[in-house]
Image (tube, rainbow, N blue to C red):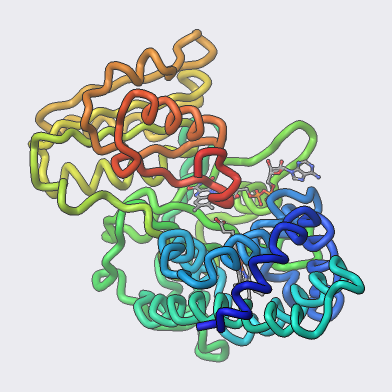
Length: 403
Ligand SMILES: Cc1cc2nc3c(=O)[nH]c(=O)nc-3n(C[C@H](O)[C@H](O)[C@H](O)COP(=O)(O)OP(=O)(O)OC[C@H]3O[C@@H](n4cnc5c(N)ncnc54)[C@H](O)[C@@H]3O)c2cc1C
Ligand code: HEM
């Protein structure tokens, strides 16, 4: 652990660095990508282009530095980030690169004030923080169901709702061992998938000079047909989402996709699955249905007696995703409440409805950032304990107001 002197120096410089967060982030990424253009194949290009959540990495280092003497308190946040890093295949050798450019950016911001003591203290602090990530990620690499990005073949692609394509993929029998990562003899029957986890797809879209990685939640844990995930075409105004449109327009049955092994810690509370007093409430909107659909399936397979409250919001009946599958699963459960909200018909999943939920309930929610913020805020205001409200943002977790 860092010495008391280092901790004191680092903590005293955090406020001024936080004030200049945007400059640090800009200098950091500019210099890092100039020296390591290969990292553009790992980082999300759209996030870089539109400056969205770019500061997650740098500002987390600053936030962690405040807890340098008790880094263990950050374990839940670090675990969640480490799952993403493992899914993206961030390796120990990447950490010194980030460290070098973060220190460079800190020097630039502090200017003449950055004496040797300060720079050395920050180098030590970053080393300690990086070590926590590296250790945790090592354990995740060891437990991963397969190494790196393995080749899968698309065996089914079906549109559900108007803009969500559900993909089923199986290990690619034609993958050659020329690229050892891609051909791995994965046996579907031996995979144990957990509801709530996501796989990560590595693509090479025509519209980009770089590879592009994106996470997609599993929408089933059954592997008899293959691994299933679903992708919404992510278009906003005139902007077309890079990977989602590529998957919709250019990836068909028979094509191959590179996937890294399932990751993530959004999962049903295993201590509650077999009991029947505390209901399971699954609340989602739009494509946010994917992880909670897998959870619904997992719950009814394990214990159909547990009361289930299913709430789903979307624009209208045409946008309603996985309608028949959800109904079939809900029929298997013994006590069900189903609530569907079509916003175009003025049906709102709002605080008034949230107030009808029993307390306690074991709640899992997924949807847009605004949707999740309102659900989490609403439930906490209604005296649901924070521990009983679980969520998975489809973007950096820290961009949630309530995270
Ligand atoms: C844990 C996790 C699980 C996820 N699970 C799912 C899932 O099950 N299903 C699913 O569909 N998605 C899921 N996502 C989201 C998914 O990973 C992608 O973020 C999503 O598909 C968008 O990627 P894209 O490449 O299509 O869009 P990007 O190119 O990354 O663009 C993102 C958004 O920005 C907009 N945009 C692009 N360029 C500009 C610009 N210049 N100015 C303004 N706006 C712009 C785009 O229109 C788009 O709406 C998940 C994300 C996470 C983190
Ligand atoms: C101690 C050092 C690090 C910290 C504190 C950190 C922190 C973070 C955080 C907070 C996120 C957002 C997580 C989310 O989506 O919820 C993130 C994502 C990410 N990190 Fe790290 N990180 C570190 C090191 C690294 C390294 C060494 C690399 C690789 C060079 C890396 C690459 C990425 C990538 C590619 C993403 C996804 C975001 C994007 O593509 O825009 N990180 N990191």
